[in-house]
Image 1 (tube, rainbow, N blue to C red):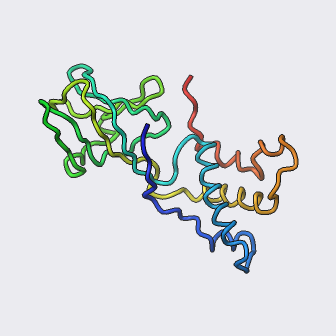
Image 2 (image 1 turned 30 degrees about the vertical axis):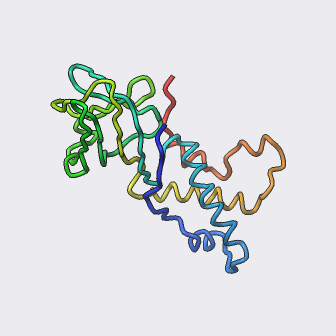
Image 3 (image 1 turned 90 degrees about the horizontal axis):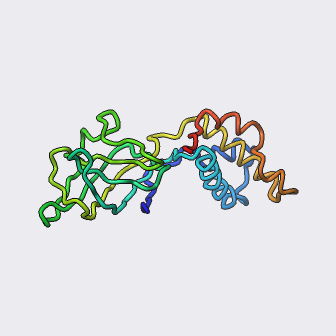
Amino acid sequence: MAHATITGTDTLTLERVKKHLNIDFADDDEYLNTLIMVSLEAVEGYCRTFFLEREYSQHIGTYLENNTPVALVTDESLRPKGLLEVQYTSSSIPKVLYVDELSLYNESANNYTYVMGRVVVKIFEDLAVDVGSDTHLLWQAGLDEIPIVINQARLLLIGTYYENRESTTALNARVLPNGVEFILDAYLVPTVA
């Protein structure tokens, strides 16, 4: 299991939400801040991806695949966009590679692939990693900036949640309001069967 820390900045501000809702008082600011967080989790959950940048720390075992040490990232929805640090064991000696040494480590360099719902990270072909040893990966996922269309969907959700603080039926609670589904479907990550 990966431990996540949010490192990105949410561009949807309280001021923007209040302008969208035509609110000029501060009484509901705490509630609106909660709705901003809820809207982000809702769109990320619906799309099965992360829009706000996060940093992940994960300990995983390593094995050899075609003489290349690889590690399985078991959190299938957390697509890495770059490694910040790799700690590994070679000949029983702990070693660390930092972000400067990992500058060429990216998706286009074929350093990771999807296999059966997991991300397989190729560490380095010429790296002598002890097979079966614990490898620690520090990596990033998410976008540098949340797309404006995603924030528009969030504003629609916040407006609906603000005006309808209680759901009237279980059926209504499952339907995304005001065309939000239409906006988000373009960003939906399909499930792998």
